Length: 318
Image 1 (cartoon, rainbow, N blue to C red):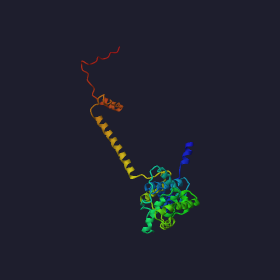
Image 2: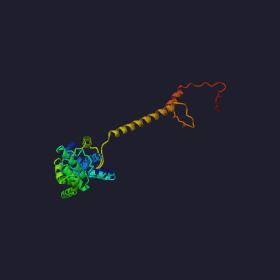
Image 3: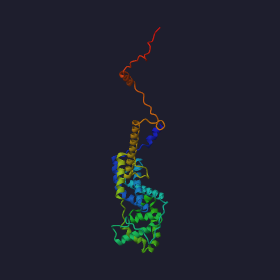
Image 4: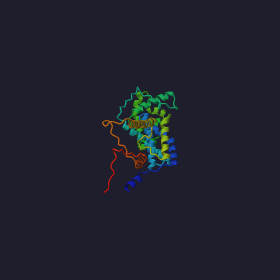
């Protein structure tokens, strides 16, 4: 009885086609925001950002199945999704914290082609944007992320607070303190005032688009999970089986079949060959003949004629 109750408690409802549609619409609306948060939290590491991106939507589906999130309530789900994106990316960043982090030098700022160019700004303004982005990257984490999300990607203070799990007043104070810390660094880099330069950058603010392959893969796996009710993992697992993994599985299965066929042929050859020696090969025990076979053999065998010398005397009965 206890086992039955445990099975019923862990059983999850299978998502319906309506939930698949809700997820597809939610994915299209939120994927740029989720990707931007993951990319910025992980300091522009694209491979790690893809992992956090997929884990975010996996966690959303898992929460939906448990009843913690309703996909049809879009506004509430978007708030939760921004929070999930930050938590997944930040957890991955902490796991990678042991790696050596290179210090940025103002005179040798990194080139950021993916995020340092905005079609709304001119060439000189894009150059200033790239230099400012490098300066902001040097700020402490609690100031760096809110400034990047607000000035470079146009997210509001309320949206940033939803993602980071901080009150609106805390986000506003951290942005203000970050700007004060950025001011002397900006002057050394040739800017008159960092706030003026950031205001120009904010004019070209835009969210980042996820890589098309990663977005398509995440959407396809989630769609299959919604329509077929299959499990795609927990909150921090990536659910993609690569072509190389499938090829390795097929190769391993083929190799096992070839080896098994080789052993079968070898045993057949050994059975049809010469009699094995007792020292090298164990003696094979032949099966006992059946009763039908014994009866057939006795019926067809010729009756031997006894010779005179070997004839046995007739038995006498007294």
